Image (cartoon, rainbow, N blue to C red; front, side, top):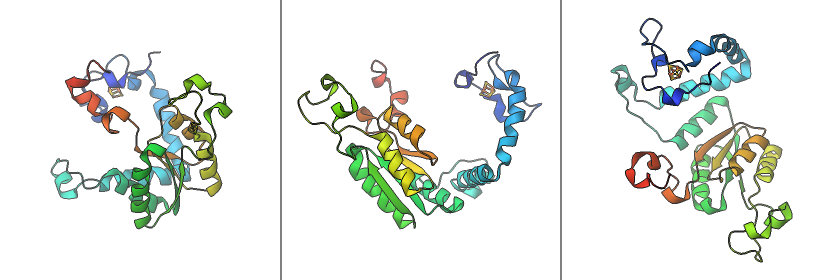
Length: 220
Ligand code: SF4
């Protein structure tokens, strides 16, 4: 059985109906995982999952100008933060969580204010919450960033998730958690997690730019 490698598939025939598809590549899941494709269809029948899924589909559709879409054109209408607010309304979410990096405190405050403007109760927890020194979590002092003998508040994604779990948020939004910390948060969060800002220190939190310009080719 071949592992899927969809990122290598240039033409994406799966966008087309059967009968109009060019030949599928050998690593294509449509060839290799047909049974699972059928099985997974039933997962969407669970009422809670379906509500989430339908709300996602409508939110996606609403992101495009309808008239343009009917002419096969793409004209987006709103940024992701508005999508998140619209999605929250669709699933009936009232209280949502914001797990943010202390380095993006300003962005988190702005994001929280926008989401509150859209009627949401925003619970927010910063990564340094708890003021726990890294050594208390068994990080060797030599791995501190600013010097081994200085207090350095540990990123505490498990605490962030736990506090949001206790607040009973409908879903949680990531704002700039570090690579790895974001995974621990996601693993620990009882509520579903979406991302508003992904941390990328060198690009102003715009990682896609590293794929578009040759000036990053010897860095990546
Ligand atoms: S599912 Fe198949 S056709 Fe679609 S992108 Fe993946 S490999 Fe390509």
